Image (cartoon, rainbow, N blue to C red; front, side, top):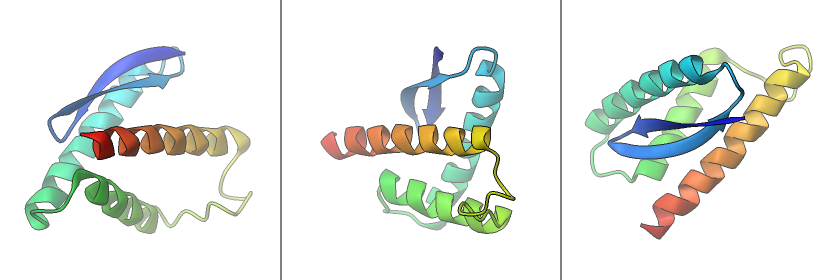
Amino acid sequence: MTKIQINVLNREYTIQCQDGEEQKVQELAEKLNSQMNELQQKIPNVSDINLFVINSLINLDNKKIDINSENNLDNNTIEKFENMAIELETLAQKIKNI
Protein backbone atom coordinates (compact mmCIF):
# COMPACT_ATOMS: atom_id res chain seq x y z
CA MET A 1 0.00 0.00 0.00
CA THR A 2 1.14 3.51 -0.83
CA LYS A 3 0.08 6.74 0.83
CA ILE A 4 -0.63 9.68 -1.48
CA GLN A 5 -1.89 13.23 -1.09
CA ILE A 6 -5.06 14.33 -2.85
CA ASN A 7 -6.86 17.66 -2.80
CA VAL A 8 -10.64 17.99 -2.70
CA LEU A 9 -12.40 21.30 -2.07
CA ASN A 10 -9.09 22.96 -1.19
CA ARG A 11 -8.38 20.41 1.53
CA GLU A 12 -5.52 17.98 1.41
CA TYR A 13 -6.13 14.36 2.32
CA THR A 14 -3.70 11.48 2.76
CA ILE A 15 -5.13 8.23 1.47
CA GLN A 16 -3.79 4.78 0.80
CA CYS A 17 -3.94 2.97 -2.50
CA GLN A 18 -2.46 -0.13 -4.04
CA ASP A 19 1.10 0.12 -5.35
CA GLY A 20 0.98 1.20 -8.99
CA GLU A 21 -2.48 2.79 -8.62
CA GLU A 22 -1.17 6.24 -7.64
CA GLN A 23 -1.72 7.91 -11.03
CA LYS A 24 -5.21 6.46 -11.39
CA VAL A 25 -6.18 7.61 -7.89
CA GLN A 26 -4.79 11.11 -8.56
CA GLU A 27 -6.84 11.32 -11.77
CA LEU A 28 -9.97 10.16 -9.94
CA ALA A 29 -9.30 12.69 -7.17
CA GLU A 30 -9.04 15.47 -9.76
CA LYS A 31 -12.36 14.37 -11.25
CA LEU A 32 -13.91 14.22 -7.77
CA ASN A 33 -12.59 17.68 -6.96
CA SER A 34 -14.08 19.03 -10.18
CA GLN A 35 -17.46 17.44 -9.41
CA MET A 36 -17.40 18.71 -5.85
CA ASN A 37 -16.53 22.26 -6.91
CA GLU A 38 -19.35 22.23 -9.46
CA LEU A 39 -21.79 20.92 -6.84
CA GLN A 40 -20.61 23.50 -4.32
CA GLN A 41 -21.38 26.27 -6.82
CA LYS A 42 -24.86 24.87 -7.39
CA ILE A 43 -25.56 24.33 -3.69
CA PRO A 44 -23.73 27.00 -1.70
CA ASN A 45 -23.58 27.06 2.10
CA VAL A 46 -23.68 23.27 2.44
CA SER A 47 -21.08 21.46 4.54
CA ASP A 48 -18.32 19.51 2.82
CA ILE A 49 -19.55 16.24 4.26
CA ASN A 50 -23.05 16.84 2.88
CA LEU A 51 -21.52 17.64 -0.50
CA PHE A 52 -19.60 14.35 -0.37
CA VAL A 53 -22.80 12.45 0.41
CA ILE A 54 -24.79 14.22 -2.32
CA ASN A 55 -22.01 13.68 -4.85
CA SER A 56 -21.78 9.98 -3.94
CA LEU A 57 -25.52 9.54 -4.38
CA ILE A 58 -25.43 11.31 -7.75
CA ASN A 59 -22.53 9.13 -8.91
CA LEU A 60 -24.25 5.95 -7.77
CA ASP A 61 -27.42 6.95 -9.58
CA ASN A 62 -25.49 7.85 -12.72
CA LYS A 63 -23.67 4.52 -12.73
CA LYS A 64 -26.79 2.58 -11.73
CA ILE A 65 -24.64 0.39 -9.50
CA ASP A 66 -26.48 -2.26 -7.58
CA ILE A 67 -24.04 -2.91 -4.74
CA ASN A 68 -25.99 -5.98 -3.66
CA SER A 69 -25.68 -7.74 -7.00
CA GLU A 70 -22.75 -10.12 -7.45
CA ASN A 71 -23.33 -9.90 -11.21
CA ASN A 72 -22.33 -6.23 -11.23
CA LEU A 73 -19.39 -6.30 -8.81
CA ASP A 74 -16.51 -8.70 -8.48
CA ASN A 75 -14.76 -9.28 -5.14
CA ASN A 76 -11.96 -6.84 -5.98
CA THR A 77 -14.45 -4.06 -6.70
CA ILE A 78 -16.37 -4.81 -3.51
CA GLU A 79 -13.11 -4.61 -1.54
CA LYS A 80 -12.32 -1.25 -3.15
CA PHE A 81 -15.77 0.08 -2.17
CA GLU A 82 -15.27 -1.15 1.38
CA ASN A 83 -11.87 0.59 1.54
CA MET A 84 -13.38 3.80 0.16
CA ALA A 85 -16.15 3.61 2.76
CA ILE A 86 -13.54 3.35 5.52
CA GLU A 87 -11.64 6.32 4.06
CA LEU A 88 -14.87 8.35 3.82
CA GLU A 89 -15.68 7.58 7.44
CA THR A 90 -12.20 8.76 8.44
CA LEU A 91 -12.58 11.92 6.36
CA ALA A 92 -16.02 12.59 7.80
CA GLN A 93 -14.64 12.29 11.32
CA LYS A 94 -11.77 14.68 10.50
CA ILE A 95 -14.17 17.20 8.95
CA LYS A 96 -16.46 16.91 11.96
CA ASN A 97 -13.53 17.66 14.28
CA ILE A 98 -12.50 20.83 12.41
